[in-house]
Image 1 (spheres, helix red, strand yellow):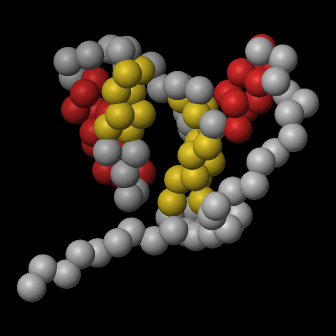
Image 2: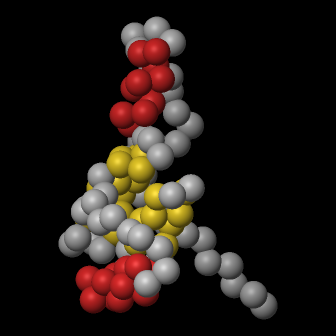
Length: 96
């Protein structure tokens, strides 16, 4: 997968060899600068879970900054209609 925002690219894939091939091909036409593993992008924290082969993305830091900026960081939490920590699975529709 390639994610692009203005002049920033995130390139990810199932293995490093494929990622390197993609980088090599793009480098033939565009000057690239490798920064390394990603930890933050567009205000999102990105945490790879290598065991689950997944990326966990959150905006906890960004949300905290906004709450502090607008002096709302001492608010009490409200109840949620959904159980906290619930693991949502994608719904697969059956077509008759």
